[in-house]
Length: 363
Ligand SMILES: CCCCCCCCCCCCC[C@@H](O)CC(=O)SCCNC(=O)CCNC(=O)[C@H](O)C(C)(C)COP(=O)(O)OP(=O)(O)OC[C@H]1O[C@@H](n2cnc3c(N)ncnc32)[C@H](O)[C@@H]1OP(=O)(O)O
Image (cartoon, rainbow, N blue to C red; front, side):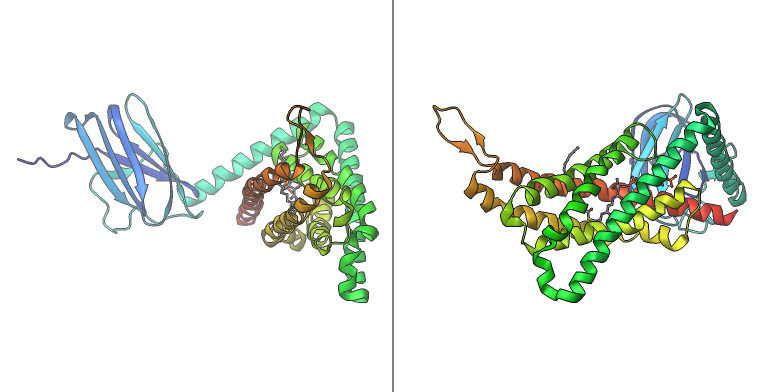
């Protein structure tokens, strides 16, 4: 005779971004928990209300949750954490209005919406307090000095990229399509200066001067300098290609918003429109930039093959050399990997920025 599956007692609580479930099972083993299309399935062996047995349950959530589920079993419970697909407060846990009999609020973790907001605020206040403590430890003069240097750095970059952007735009209006062919000759020196200077950003990230990751910054700086110095700078045949125009224009289009945003940030101020632009226009510009850079690399491949520039000599016995174009093929793959890493990073930064903003507004 088929036996009915046993259901454990489950208690739940929520925050704006998470759902917590606590399954009352002692010494749980062989835990299988997953989410598919808003439905959570749980199965495990353990000691519950009906003694040592296999227990299972399923819950259809009110709203979508992310498919990654984290769970941790203690001697007495299995704690499950899920991330809501969209930040918000749910009026109940399950899609069905009637609460399943095995489900109850987790009073140890229970907060109502305003308490949860308060919890967020407290966390933020704690973070700010830590920040000002760090300031005190480092000394006010040190903080002022680094802020001043950052401000000057951002100002110089802003002026450099604005010059590039305005110059290219004006030339486009005056000379039309002809201006696409001499971008390198008119712009490259200022671009060389700005992009060499951008190495400072890797140091800032590495020494914790700004709150950002070293890898995304390194990808950005190395990636651009590779295109600028190797593909454009060292191959004369590339100088007159229109692709130089598109690459320089896309690079400078983001920087004329990014650097002034940082300049205001140095004084803990912001201008909402500028913040929105800094964290939004990369969405079309970044992929376009990578595509333009990929076109430049592809165009340069036959030139490297022909000129044997940077080719890697092989031992005399073999008698040939490896063309640099092989490196470029590998680089093309790396570019799209770099795009993926930085797109994810920028998406995270955008979410962090706008989420914090929303929280601040709800205070
Ligand atoms: C390991 C090497 C491997 C090499 C492999 C090569 C692979 C090649 C792949 C190449 C792909 C690159 C393509 C690219 O060149 C194409 C383009 O650029 S197209 C144009 C569009 N591009 C963009 O939109 C990207 C622009 N760049 C960036 O946004 C940054 O460089 C990036 C590192 C990607 C992200 O910036 P960050 O992490 O710093 O984000 P935030 O702006 O949110 O800053 C975080 C906090 O730090 C403060 N901050 C940062 N910098 C400064 C500064 N200079 N001055 C003051 N404050 C700064 C910022 O205010 C944030 O603070 P808070 O959170 O407190 O507000």
